[in-house]
Image 1 (cartoon, rainbow, N blue to C red):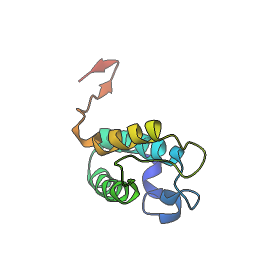
Image 2 (cartoon, helix red, strand yellow; image 1 turned 135 degrees about the horizontal axis):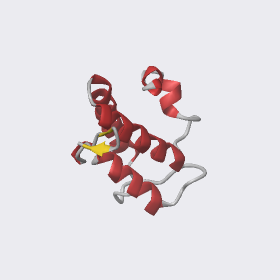
Image 3 (cartoon, one colour; image 1 turned 135 degrees about the vertical axis):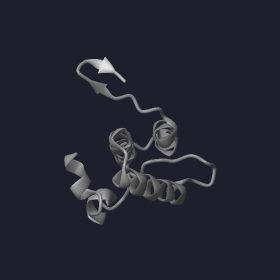
Image 4 (cartoon, one colour; image 1 turned 90 degrees about the horizontal axis):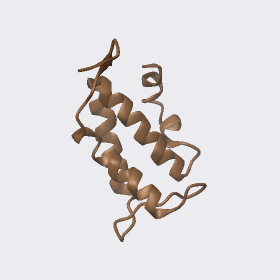
Length: 99
């Protein structure tokens, strides 16, 4: 997966200096992709994202983006899905068959 070379780049992962809702959705998409592949990159990413999300959580238990997508409902749903990414079963599709 091409993006794995960028995962150790703090600037890439940090986004544009503040965390907007689009970063939450990007993190969710990256998590879903890495989870399908598994391995060390997935485990490292998942642990780092969980730590990051706890630090970004609001006192009332929600999350909100600091720019662009700021709505608490959308951003909180992305954060929760991100926190639960490792609980999703992995479905591999090869040769148009699900395994």
